[in-house]
Length: 204
Length: 204
Image (tube, rainbow over all chains, first blue to last red):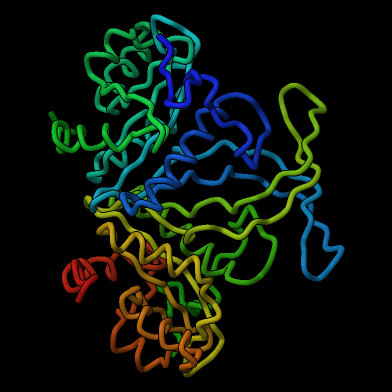
């Protein structure tokens, strides 16, 4: 199902790609650009203060052709220690990562790094609102999926269980987002739902 | 006054500098290395989950000599939009920046960028615990200084008031930290004090 904007353009055509200053790979950039725009909207509307963290870089060589500006001449991408997005919303600490798949029936767990899942759980234990934002690209469906639900499948996969989360399970334990104009990705709707229904269920 | 560690070394000698992977300037690096170690301690002890954000980089040119690893060949440091440190502690969102001065009588406000002060206030308005960690290097004194107090001097300086915060004012409105072995910078003591005394005083 195509979601149509008031201007008649299909949702897919409306995706932003030009906004990404750091564009060193196609994987996930579209989702990132949409989230950056959504974060900007939420900040401007004073709804929340949430940013994407910069990509961690290991700098090896820097030149100083002028006093005023250093030029990095050799550097490498590092594996992030944490998730990509965090910030504050109505007194709550919010932490999430955004992932997408072209699969239609399930979400492959290999999209998560072990340290990201560990980080989400550490934040959850401190009382944060922690989730994965999962997009099924082909299906054009988008979910806020709580880390408490992710844990179930993650731990099973470590014990030779299945290596993906069925879409049905994400539908049941997650909150579906419906893209709109402002913000493009209204993920605070999912955060509200997490606060109302899931807060404090870490040990449940 | 020199603070002595159990091994008899003065505090100053105990500072970590080798830990900083990204070492492209001396300014503030010592404080940064101490904070990284402190954050690591707090995370390991499950007291809080707080990280320094990576330095934002504008990437211009990337080579791919091998499939496995990209090499950044041209990039520039960007001005950060936010503060350097954030995370979660006992359900609270914590956000701060760390600054130091060699001055003995006051802290120069030029150490803060306008967007950093704006960011701290935006987070404060969302119910976050927001402060500046200020070190007087020569005096070997370290304070957690609430953004609500910083605002007073910041706004005055914009109206042709003095361009620095007197040490006496920081002593009065701040919380002095006493460096120790674990963590090196026990800034959560100051966060506890902010929670007990300052929480919700944004509009006061």
